[in-house]
Image (cartoon, rainbow, N blue to C red; front, side, top):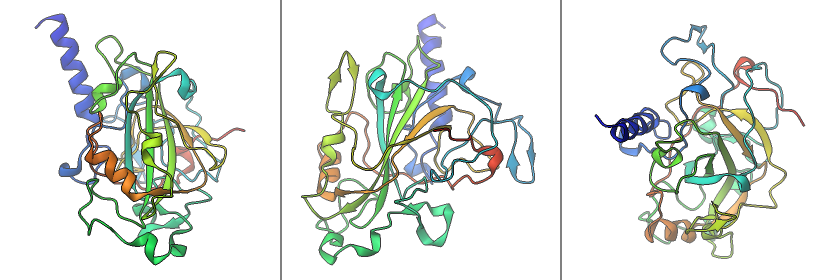
Length: 293
């Protein structure tokens, strides 16, 4: 095997290991959440001890209640630079908010296992909840009236955005610093609501770095904290070893349903055409980092 082949295999192994973190089923699996390599793992997933249903030996976990700054996990790693100093490598969505926040505090289905809904969900008009596609939108797993959490994943690697976790790493950069910018949206049948294309990538570059067209504003100062990767493959007893700097905005915003369907229908470099499942909210203090302001 050549050196180049070994590097490609390493990259494939990293992506393959993380491919299940975003979905509830194999059919929904996505490799879009970001990647990290050995030195960004705070523990070995096969050897960390479990006691009383809580995994031990891991760094802080995500998602969390961003309105609660308490945490007993003091494992530390360097915070990622701001997004403007990093390369965007992936954009994906989760149906229902994975985090709980001041603007999205209603448990979906009455349980934290299903994520959270925007507080304004019950106040939507009938018109805002009509599905103009009759349930056949180009972006699967999202309908008017749904809450979604959008993740913009950034990497320190010099890479080009593309399909899958492999786009966050390269043969020469298999151990990136990772950052996720997060915004929770309430999807509505209203073309006057925010347009998803305003936050998409579409080849946009700034100062030589791949960037989204913009990031959401007007939804409160983001809560920034140390955490991990998310997705339904992980729980409080099966922790993620990967280290991520999170930046989560505390309020919901309404998003045009037709705009996110258009994003999928016209194709996107991430290969995203469906929304992913959620990881149950992490509440054990020993799995949460303290948030400092």
